Length: 366
Image (cartoon, rainbow, N blue to C red):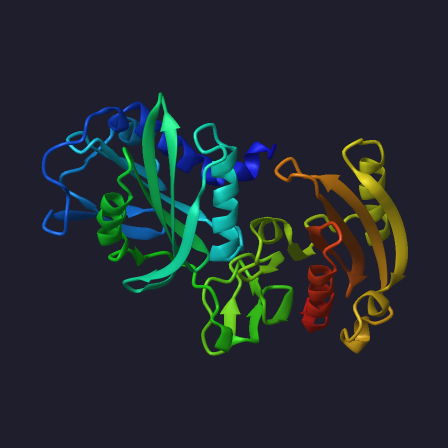
């Protein structure tokens, strides 16, 4: 079973489905169907603005939860609940996130062994969307669940409606009207493909970001440049990884040490000794070699700098079987101590190579 840390991203959706089952879905549907003539009001949910029918009332538990990223609305006349959830896609693509979403549903009590249908689509101004649906049984009754996933700038909005009976077409039409009017209102703008390469400049370094990667501390790219929000770390991630796990666990970080009283060698030794006594870390090694050997093509004045490397693996509780490999490099440049951390799923040489290649575009300026 997957652990709970990453799973919480989609757990809200599963919780909403359980709420639907316990409340509205137990009602008998009747009365007029909600359609495009029903008035809507616009609400903000996380990074998105979303319309909701005025005939749906926000549930008491949703109000009590006071979360800006999750809202649940009831229409007792129809026996329906609509859950709206905004979440960070953890650097995965829409396809990668949708596959993870499906896997969590299949692990849930109600969704086990469900035949989940999934198809890509576009909705209104949003071109990266998909529609998921499945039916499950609860207390001998059929329950239909339909979801639109809307992807924008690394965030995903899900609009999910659940009702009793085999009512897919009614539900799909109902939430499609809402989904087509969704707007992204977040501050972070994912770099477009034609904006590469772009440069990020911080207090201690500048980096030309390679295609396929992003600097997640730089919120917007303009005229080939983006300014870092953090002053002492440059964090580089995958752009739209094909797997949710790949996006979540792959990272490259360049950092100016907050403690300049210890040498790079001492920091590496301390890190090694600290992990040596802990069972959760495996494949622990300590090595020394030059910057240029590890990162070919680096600036010439850094080529002969000594790198002190600590490598280890750990099992992420959120994964099924794979472990995560971590490489940490400590070095000194112009009298300052720096560190470089690379993380990737065990055996993912493609991501490791992309990070190594990215390092030749790093210029330390302090």
